[in-house]
Image (spheres, rainbow, N blue to C red):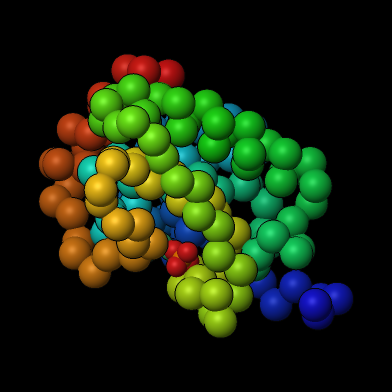
Length: 142
Ligand code: 5GP
């Protein structure tokens, strides 16, 4: 592990946090933000990020790590109810070698169904109205 976090302030999630790029938000508190993944693996795929600059888990302040997990729990419960999914996966990738593509730490909340294989990424960009309609259902369960 490098001692110095090579965090890039211009990554897309930093821009979303600053409100410079749009996102479909479902939950926010002082330490975290949750919003719809723009290329969902399944409907209801949400990302949770801490409001602290950290490239990956190794660089994240433990207070923010706790907050990120608490929010993942709150939003995960709402996603499961909103999507009527029997389960959900929490995925968190650290470094490019692990498949990480956006270098601001985040957890994926991915609804899971019996018999449907787990994929972590999709390349299909969701329709904004569709994302908003699912986000509305999730917000209603919070
Ligand atoms: P990673 O590969 O880093 O674990 O996951 C990054 C995730 O961010 C991917 O699932 C990708 O679809 C999502 N993503 C990439 N760019 C954007 C964006 O601009 N907005 C949103 N909402 N999600 C994004």
